[in-house]
Image (cartoon, rainbow, N blue to C red; front, side):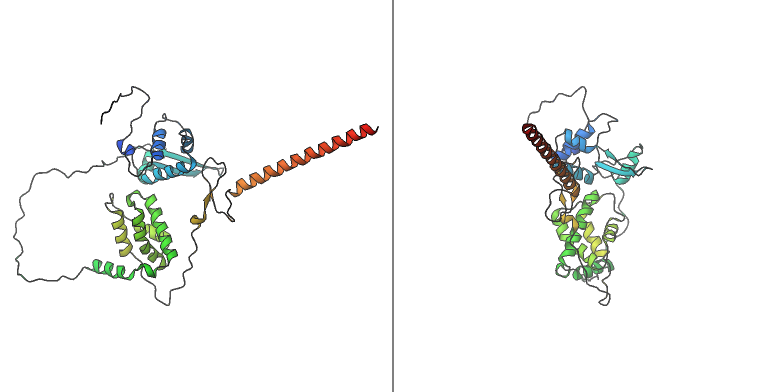
Length: 322
């Protein structure tokens, strides 16, 4: 592979290779991020305006922004002034940041980002510890499992997919997917979410709320998680709430998740707008009201035109009769 490169002398931006080669960012997400990073210092241009200039569609922009937020490249803060007006502050970064690091960067303080490649510390070899190996008596001893292993095995045996209602399994899958999008250290694949959904549904069946599930799964996370699915499975089994007694159990009424019934409005909006259709509508209530008012105004104009034409005919007839 031959390559011919001429380094630009001006109008260029330095971009880390991990952004260009990111395995989870789409082409639109990379283009949106690079375009935003290439703007001059102090430029106050929101992401949706950058997407319009980059000719990125509404749906593609929504997906690209969601990916950038999930990977820690885009952050947003909403604030309300004394008059009650809400405003949104956006920040883009050329490196992945946590929520705490983003707050520090927003304040203008330096952020120390650890290197991505970790090598073992180089040191001098030490002498062998004094001691001897354990005598082999030839007898096999079976050690009982520890309390933690026995507890996890017991609870894993209690949790079977057939005992959890399908609606709770679906809600558990949605909670795990949302957690995977908000916490970059807990990235899950679709198969991981489906495999862990019955455990999360068991939490909800035992009376835990979605907030309890999120707090217990994210409390005290290490700086680097090598296997998000393994860590979540361990915490789901180890921290699972106690099963209520038969006297305390009540029938669980599971409402269908509202997010599954929501639809994106097909009207003209600067930003995507979701709404819940009642009878298969494709426009949100605001767009339907605007169209109804426009149709009413057009009908009024037509009626006025017809009345004017009738008046002209009456006047012409009167002139002819005179």
